[in-house]
View 1 (cartoon, rainbow, N blue to C red):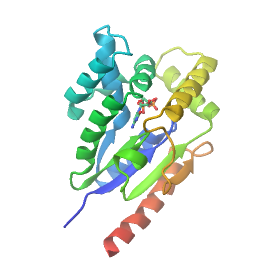
View 2 (tube, protein in one colour):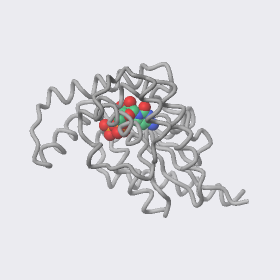
View 3 (tube, rainbow, N blue to C red):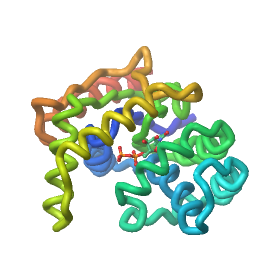
Length: 216
Ligand code: CDP
């Protein structure tokens, strides 16, 4: 029986994993899920209702009710929502509810590219290809900084760097599903790579996995 082809991409904030995931999904005709948006959407519900981010039962209810098909990147992409997302993402009940929906998404033919923090380790441990995309914190801060300025916003580089370092510590240090490369992930350090180079390097790894899968 035909199985979905799944590509798992993990990595820290502003590592370039989202752009890479979108390009790979388009290149291979797969669907794409930015799992960060699902954590952002839960945080956004709490912020919108003026509820404290420590309210685990409200966060769990929001997670269970979430519809992955209705996530709006524009409202969820703010810095404030990202910071709030990493706070509710430590809650095991929230993670259980979201991971279940993410697995369902991944298990639909023809397959999918999922990007996040725990895709290769928890959500799709049997993924056909796992990539761990990273870059030095100062390079990631620089990218975020330019993105904000390009969008007409204002930002302080030192503040962005401090934010990224704080978020890394929270994501890597939490007890449930911390950010770390899966044992069988390919590491891709994009500190010195543009998106095209990262895309071509990933494509090579995926083509090899594709060929191996079609042989069996
Ligand atoms: O785009 P950026 O890297 O800033 O953040 P994101 O991918 O949208 O994720 C926001 C937050 O959600 C992260 O800092 C994580 O704490 C959390 N998250 C997670 O715990 N597990 C995932 N699979 C995806 C995101």
